[in-house]
Image (cartoon, rainbow, N blue to C red; front, side):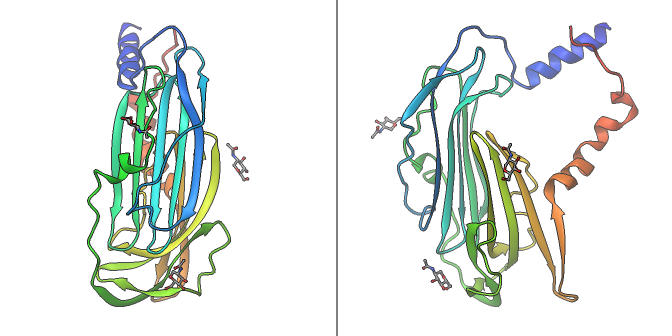
Length: 249
Ligand SMILES: *[C@@H]1O[C@H](CO)[C@@H](O)[C@H](O)[C@H]1NC(C)=O
Ligand SMILES: *[C@@H]1O[C@H](CO)[C@@H](O)[C@H](O)[C@H]1NC(C)=O
Ligand SMILES: *[C@@H]1O[C@H](CO)[C@@H](O)[C@H](O)[C@H]1NC(C)=O
């Protein structure tokens, strides 16, 4: 029992959970912009609302940028978040190009109105993206649209050297957003997944349904990244040493 208790304390502190009283006011709002040039030029990212969270909740702001060439997408959310989140500020560059660019800015904090970034420059300024690429001979469709609006046989472009065709449906949920985008473009080889099988980005949970194109047979295999993560990631938890269940008290 004692060992059990210690495990719990360790687990909770690893998760960044420290009891705190009172409620925090956080900026609140979502942003969804489909346009072009968002990986080059910063745009305003403001909330026009603020809201008191539940006791012990902290504030968050999450921004995801995807750029496929002449089209780009910004998804942002500001608001309260559950208290289990660790205080962090974190920029991730999933793909720096050439070809598709994907990057995120995530900030969890615990002071009044601390989720106060007001421009996408918080993400763009620290990024170093690939220079204008030398084109290769591979041609791929390029598209970034709400799910169902990409026709995979139009808009072919010559891809940068060292990239291959990539096609996926990407679903992002959480922070008051729930949306799916279809993405076609040129992705740096040998990457198969744009988000590197990551299943959460700040407040968003992400499901990337990537179509692996088998050039020989022209067959398409759908692989949801969450399934892979489940198979690869949860296995250790199912091993005998983790089967003991500790009561929460
Ligand atoms: C944007 O936020 C920064 C710091 O978060 C602040 O210094 C700056 O004045 C803000 N700019 C505007 C236009 O509100
Ligand atoms: C983007 O590129 C495609 C292929 O080159 C072209 O057909 C399309 O018109 C471009 N879109 C914009 C908005 O420039
Ligand atoms: C998100 O949207 C899908 C499709 O509209 C729906 O099936 C699903 O239940 C929604 N999820 C949440 C958490 O709202």
